[in-house]
Every structure is written in C-alpha cells, then in structure tokens.
Image 1 (tube, protein in one colour):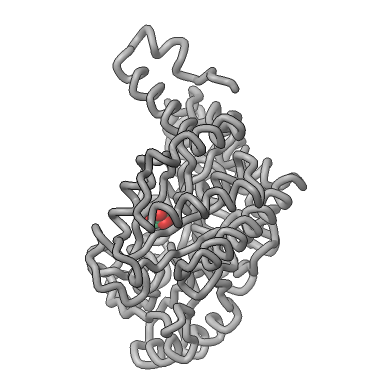
Image 2: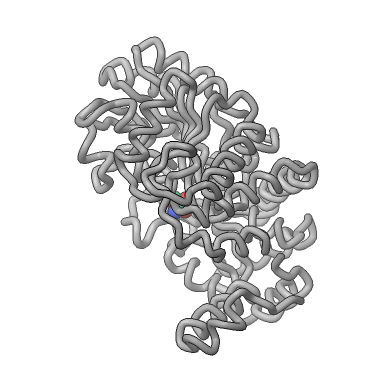
Length: 413
Ligand code: DSN
C-alpha cells in the first residue's frame, strides 16, 4: 500500500502541525470504509493538480477574456476542462467549470433563470431534495419565492403532485434532482411539466453525475435547459461544481457565475476537474459506474433480506436509504456506532421523518467510494451483515477487525 502523500515531504518540515493533521486524515481514510453517498476517492493525479502552483493564479473572467495578465495557462486548462466536460456529457451545448460547489452552481443558475425574488419549485429536503432547491434555511429559500414538492407514500416522486405544485405556483424554474433520492428521474416528464407552465427545467445531478456520464442511469442533458452537478461525488473528481447549459441560456449562466456570484476561479480545482473528466472518458470508468450501481442494488437486497426497510424497496443508483423507523434506533445513533466499527455513513431524514435533522430515522449509504477501492458482491454482503448487526445492537468492536481487514485488502487509489 502506498503511503506517499503530497504533504509528507515539504510540509512536514515547514509546518509539522498541519502536516500531522493531514497525515491523520490519510490514516483515517485508509482505515475507514466510506459509505457516505456524497464522497469518493479521487485519483492521485487529480490530487496532484489540486495542490499545484496554479493555485496562486488569479483568472477572473473566462478564457481569452480575463481581468489579469498571465492567464494563458489558465485559459488552456479551462478550455480543456470545458471541452472534456462537453465530450463526457454528450449533447451539452455549454459547460461552465468555475462553480466552487454544487450549491454555488445552483445559486448562480437560479439567479440567472428566475431572477431575484423569482418563483422556483424544487423537491423538499426531507423528501430527498437538497437545501439549495429552495429550503427556507438556504439563500435559495430566502432570495426566491420557493415552493416544494414531496414524494408519495412509497418514497417515489409523484409527477401529478409536481404538476399540481407547478400549476399553482407558476414558477420560472422547476428543479429535478436531490441528495438522497435513489430512483431514476423522468427528466422528459419534468421538462414537459416545466415548459407547459412557461418555466425552465434545472436538473441537479450532483449525486448521479458519474453514473449519468457513464450512461448507466438516464441523462437530463439535452432535455433540461440547465444541468448542475458536483464533480467530487460519483464523478470522482476534485471538490467543485459545474453547470451545463443550452445555448439560449449559456450567457446568462456565465454572468451569474462570474461576476454575479464568484470572483477568481479556483484554477487548481479546474485542472483537477479536467483530469477527472479525462479519466471519466476512459472505458474503465463506465465499468466502474456499472459496478457502483450493481453494488448499491446488491447492498439494498442484502439489507432487505436481513429484515431492514429500504426507502422505495431498493435503488436505481448509488444510494441506499435505510428507514430505521421500525427499529429502536436513530440515524444519529447508528452513524456513531458505525464509525466505531470503521464505517463512515451518514444519518439522513427519510420521507415523513418525525425526528429532527440532527437525529433522523434514516441512514444514507452509497457505494461509490468502496467500489473505487474494488469492492464486489462478497465485500458488499459483509458490509450488509455489519450494518444489520449494528442496527440490531451488536457491539461495534466486534466488527472492527473485519473492517480493518477489508481496508487492508482494498487500499485507497
Ligand atoms: N453534502 C451533499 C450530500 O451529502 O449529498 C449535499 O450538499
């Protein structure tokens, strides 16, 4: 197993305190199985770009239209990232690789498409949506007039309910996508609902971006007017965001990102994005995403066979949402117990959850990171046994050695 890190050499002599924290994080990740659905392990090449010298460079503006001199390398990198993004997401007419995160991508897109105070409709966080889709604690719920739709009793989006909310609210933007929604989304139906009401469709694929790029789940590209995403979840790149837009709205999106909501782009992250998109264009990436999806379906099946409730009974993507309401436990309690066993998971509301967000009755699991480590059916089945044991009250210590052995057999990239 390689232990070399970019901070081992210079940093440990220049700033041993920070180096020690970063080394501790290396050890934590190596010795933990990450089942957090929004996390992954990017390649050493991506990490190298992110710690490169271009972090020093100011490049406000866009390629060939910058507010600073000396941007020729920044231009080359940003153009390459945009070209690769459009190759990866076939049908994309424009790509903006500058958003610092998924939330800033959504905020910029909403300002561009709805305007300040404009009406928007998105999925409620509790139903599987995202804070930045109009939640009242997010600026998207404060700066826009937001209404939210939920899911039906089975945990699935009810398109009749979406249509009803859209007809009633007459928004400028309808948002499709979420952070704990595990089923495929019918983007064509969403587009029809949005367009009937004179609204545009924003598809947020922050979670399934990698699966979409690999063609193993449906793509909204070419259907939605704008597609936002993060680059660090299933897409397995550096932390950041991206916006794909149809030609008609590309200019508005561009100015909403810069100068509207951001200053200088993080060129080191954009270099990392270019590398990740290049990796995602290789055939191995498609195979990886196919395994991510198969592993999630298998994890859901193993947990159901052991008697646990899974929201919607299974999954179409990388997310498995365990509903703990029939057990004595809470999401917070299992998150803590899982960590003691060496598994990183996160508590998450389930639709209709009576518990507050810091407690919750759900557990969100994802297979992107462990599949990067090389997990297949046997290892996923072992994980299911451990999670089931923890929910049933077993001592986490009992599973620690098995988790450590999996971590050693399946090292980080
Ligand atoms: N933090 C992301 C997630 O976990 O899904 C959403 O912002």
